[in-house]
Image (tube, rainbow, N blue to C red; front, side, top):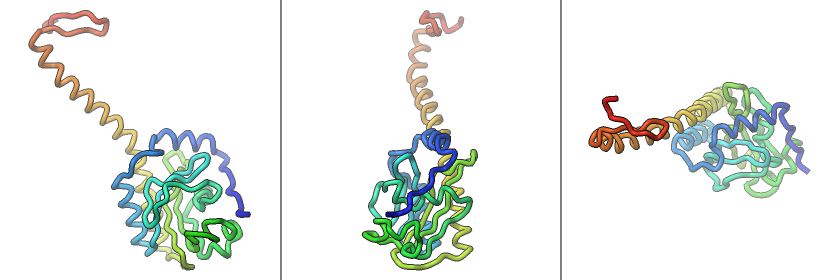
Length: 203
């Protein structure tokens, strides 16, 4: 049996922070796909993913080299990565007691190599990871690990912008609604107040 990943001490707060981003189940976005492609290129790895860890699964916002939307949390290497401050590397998963019995190692896709950087937000919560994988034994250089961490920080920056982007989209929609209403108000020279009464524009 594979070793079950430990649960972070701040798990309740971590999950709440993750849900606040309202990103789970969202559609693919080019910005996140670009980061995954860069991670794959820099680390010369055929598989790269940006995954977010909720209570039961690792859900992929972006994944390159595989067509898998999510995996169970107990099988996710990233469930261990969120416990780290820096990049977690596995040169040969068959030699690591945490993962040697994992179905992802024994069966397809038969992972051997893994390197993942935790996605840590401004409050210090690890939301998931940016990782690269390979089916052969290998290692990454310090420069590649530094680059992976830099990309993880950029990923978090994109996440932090999502609430702002949502707010701006709603504000733009309200402005567009007002733009269609104002000509009517101008024509009839009346404006309705918060209590539902109409007043002359001059008032």
